[in-house]
Structure formats: structure tokens, C-alpha cells
Length: 60
Image (tube, rainbow, N blue to C red):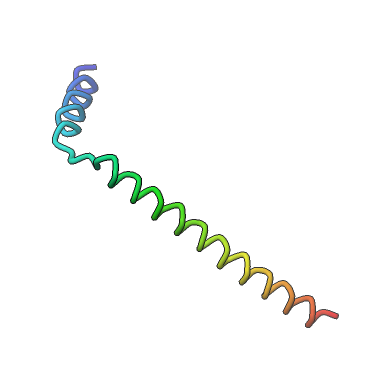
């Protein structure tokens, strides 16, 4: 049990050392992540549609 208490005490100590992003940075990073995910989603959807169409064309 003492090991678990020590672990969480160490985690708490390390979390205080973390440099957390400010509000504007957080907004900028969030927009970057959402736009990247949207781009990758659209990219793979187009690739999937293209491959599906190609396979359908081959099989017919």
C-alpha cells in the first residue's frame, strides 16, 4: 500500500513541474489537431472511394 501512496505522491510532484499551455496556445493546438484529423479523414475517405470504385470496375 505504501508503494501506491509513494507513486501518487511522486506523480503529483512531477505534475507540478509540467509546463502547461496558456489559453491561446491551447486554442491554437486544438484547432491544429481538429483540422489535421479532418484532413486525414477526408483524404482516406477519397482514397477508399477510389479503391472501391476501381474494385467494382474490375469485378464487373
